[in-house]
Length: 96
Image (cartoon, rainbow, N blue to C red; front, side, top):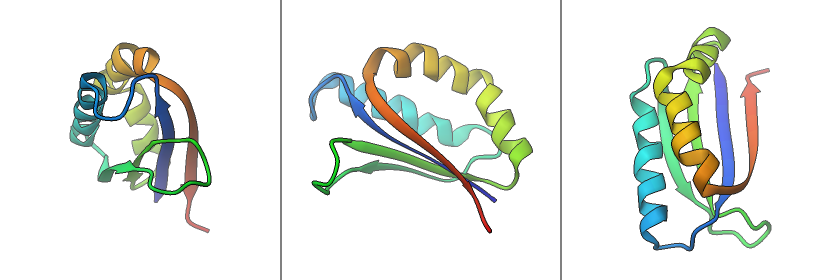
């Protein structure tokens, strides 16, 4: 099992139309084959300056790699990620 998580800060303020548009587009990533347990998350802690998280699981590395190259994912990255995200940290784990 692969756990894929990313924490991010948007260029736009919380509650803005851009925030809503980005989060709506991100939620559609859950429809890509191989994605399980997709979650959009809002940061509530004060220990960092990230505002949101996206988390999902894949059964194996092949499914994760297929997701990364899937046309819906690459379109999301070029259309939304590059335009809306100020900074991010990506974390990919597998069970030990």
